[in-house]
Amino acid sequence: MSAPDDAVAQPIDGAERLSPQIARRIRAMIISGEASGNQALRTEHLAERFGVSATPVREALMSLTGEGLVQLRPGRGFRVVPMNRQDLLDIYDAQAYFAGELAGRAASRLTDGDLAQIDLMQERIIDAISRGDPAAEQIEWDLHSLINRVAQADKLRWLLRLTMRSAPFTAWSSVTGWAQAAPEDHLPLLRGLRNRSERTSRDAMTAHVRNVGDLLANHLSGRGILCDEPGSTRS
Image 1: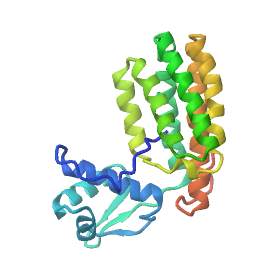
Image 2: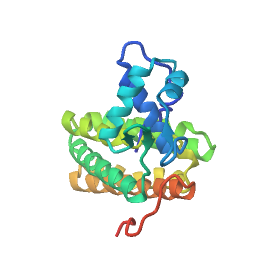
Image 3: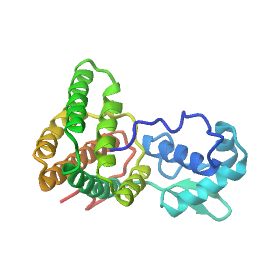
Image 4: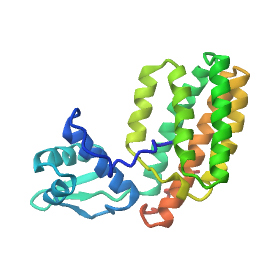
């Protein structure tokens, strides 16, 4: 899943280059539907909004053209490229693969203390969801992060972050079905990790990420953020 981080609202970090920060904010605007398909992206307007000069905004927009999220039209400026349902599912399929591999590798490396911490996180997720507390999103993120770190596979973690960057969704509590899927999908994953089963852990994590990807696609399609094209549904 994507990180629970509202990139649009985050203050500018003076220790990091501006253009990657602006690119994150524009991605978040696109995936949230604030910047919809075919909408013009005015460099001067974005610069004013984020409190920066036009140069890092233009650099950010150019980098997003390389990702296929934005298009530069000669003489007409930048516009948002419409995202269809299959585009999003493709991103989550890639994310599911890398997350699954990390979970499989973590299965043999988790200590008893790690497993106890994961069990505690699972209990906290269930409790937070039962109370309607959006903190459940951060707890689940922390659970995934622990598994990914223990896997000791830096290249896989880097590739996973690339896929997550392409779909920086943050409001998981608003997605129909997420409150059930998050804790229930974890059950076979937790069994696999406790049994030190690489295959079970990998398959459970892969299924979990694909499932929440489907839920998010339904959510965004329902809000008109994704365009459903013929043949765009997963077989």
